[in-house]
Amino acid sequence: MTMIEALNGAIDALSAAVFTKLSLFGTPIEAIVIWLAVPMLLATLLLRFINITGLGLAFRVLRTGQDKAEDGDVSQFAALSTALAGTIGLGNIAGVAIALTSGGPGAIFWMFVIGWFAMALKMAEVTLGLKYRAIDADGHVRGGPMYTLKHGLAARGQPRIGLVLGGIYAFFALFGAIPLVQVNQSYAQVAAVTGFTSGWGYGIVMAVLVAAVVFGSAPWLGRVASRLTPFKVAVYMIGVLAILILKADAVPAALAAIWHGAWSGDAALGGAVGSFVVGMRRAVFSSEAGVGSAVIAHSLAKTDEPVSEGLVALLEPFFGTVIVCSLGGLAMVVAGTWDDGLQGIAVTSAAFASVADWFPVVLAAAVFLFGYSTLCAWGFYGLQAWGYLFGRSGVATWSYRIGYVAILPIGAVLDLGRVIDLVDSAFFLMAIPNIVAFYLFAPELRRDVVDYLRRDRARRAA
Image 1 (spheres, rainbow, N blue to C red):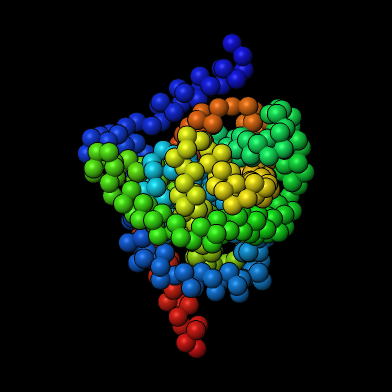
Image 2 (cartoon, rainbow, N blue to C red; image 1 turned 90 degrees about the horizontal axis):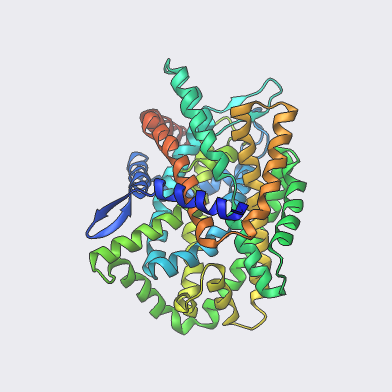
């Protein structure tokens, strides 16, 4: 048995164990989808629809910043850029295509809706992450759901339970921090455009480039992300807007197909549930709300106000899922390539090619940038989880970095379906302890947010 065959078997076993299914209206639905959907709704209600009412305040906080705070390693904009580098990746390109081919146009509607609810949950987990982050003797900060659980429960007199739950999250995060989708789908598009046929070769080149950032410091990652993230989104959105503008006459029919697809299907209500499940899975991969990964990046922010960074984090699903995914999905429905028997990034590439034969080259550039920046960000996330479990000695840190970079080439040669199953399984396992933290600390979260908003209104009135 080859290494790839063994890995495929392990992935099949993991995905079968994770995706326990219930039956709703005759349609299989993963229990983990309910596990994530419920806290998104509860966070929205708990925080009084902050995903709508707080949007303007979030932009104001991001614009003004609080960089004079003593604690933190990077600015709030750099923290958001680092988190977006990990969040806005190929899940926003290939993930949307996968949602379309699996759940039809209606899945795009559910991604849009779920993106709005994800904003409240993302704010909640980041606010808690900032509140319970750790500050080293040298002034550097460490954060993430593992520290939320560890320090939050320690403050309640349950340090051992917090330490164990934090360790469980960190362990699952090590698997989630292997974003093989980024290598797999960026190689697929680059190979389609250039004719390059060596998956191992592409994976090695990508690994070397990622190493240049992963082996650096958190501030270095923040500088790279703050420059690369806006550029990569701009490149992709140019292509998407070109499709929508040049095929504007097809937009009304595409919107109608998305709307009707969200509420109907081969099995009526069962079809709608199926469309929701697909949209939920891909929206989680796109926004990472409930997974807790972006909390690690936001914890680096220079601010003494946890809620203010929570507001900044609220913008992640807004940009990544509500805007980028929705417009990208609409463009693919307009182009009509989602129903041509293609898979993954090939659906998006065909949509770009419907504008001009050379246009997939633009997509290849965007895909490479999306994949590269996400791999850099997740390398940092995994390092923080590794440090929580095994310490931050030089040997421990370098062993993780070398292992992370070394495993990336495998993503280029794995089957797309198994790569998706692996990433989804890891993400949803990470969501279990992270959502437990949300439920445990929900009352104090609400008090902190209400207090911050009251003080903000007083400052503006003065």
